[in-house]
Image 1: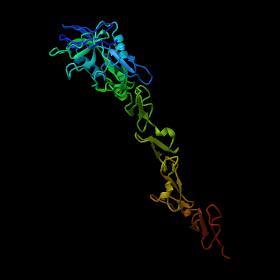
Image 2: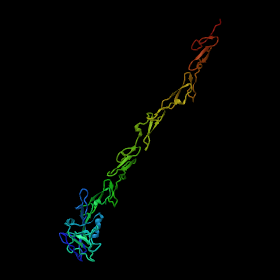
Image 3: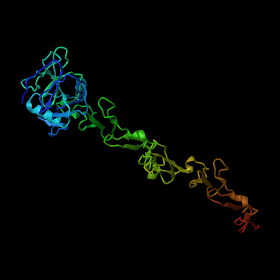
Image 4: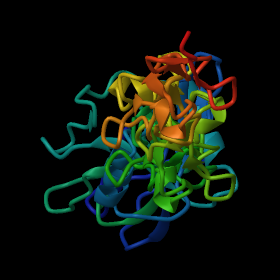
Length: 404
């Protein structure tokens, strides 16, 4: 039931206790502070604190002065509780059950003596729960702050007194953006008034919006990649990095794996069978094909390949010689004088000269020898005048013609 307002000159604060009338204290009372937090339920209808009429409340664990209590609530986006109707007042009393201490609420007469105003600026309405003789704030008494007694009545009291307090907020503590965007907020259970910010998987830091926040955990800092690989940190929630072998290298890129080795372009057999393949060092991806000695061309299977170098194209042989290219790895040719000629066959040598068959003296002494021009190899033997025969030493030779 409502209790009329009563005031005296001995106290400066209002105290509320459940099931008891408001009492005035003319001496200093060391009480714990009660903080009520009102928090709106979230979309799921859940409230991390004590819920009442779409709000959430919490009682502090330790006592503070009124100023300290107000600051504590404000620091988490809350305010000292407002008890503007009987249902809320009863709810606040239920929070204090078992506490054995009174609690500060958000009601003061700082602006004008005995004109009590809620901390949101609204004036005290028709609902009032003053204990008998309260408020008793008088000139010089400094009883400008109000506490709720365990019985539910209010008492004005000196703001320097220490009591528990009840904090109230319009939203859950975790909805006040105290945590970094990449952190998970966990409301700490009563009597704690704050929340714990834990950086999400893949992030590191204190998690606080006002602190170091949460930054991506750069997995590349641990140097997981081969010296010939590029490290790319995988975005959260991944905790690892991607190692990509640089151009010209192959492998998984990991120090703990196969690493990165030169990609041997020769394994693809790009060269002609008569060429030597040399893998080009990274970052080149190809190989160099060099035709073997005695061959010419680009050396590529997909190109001109390698063909025998025809040494005869350089015309090394005498005009009366036949040129035969020597097979690789020889780079020269063989020059063979044609039939009827003799010599080394080389333009740069003795060349090829007619083979004089008369040098072999095939003719009779009484015959004249005439070398037959190439390609004939022999000579013609003609018996001199007055002689007859084939003229050949190996034949009938030449004999005199008898006179008739």
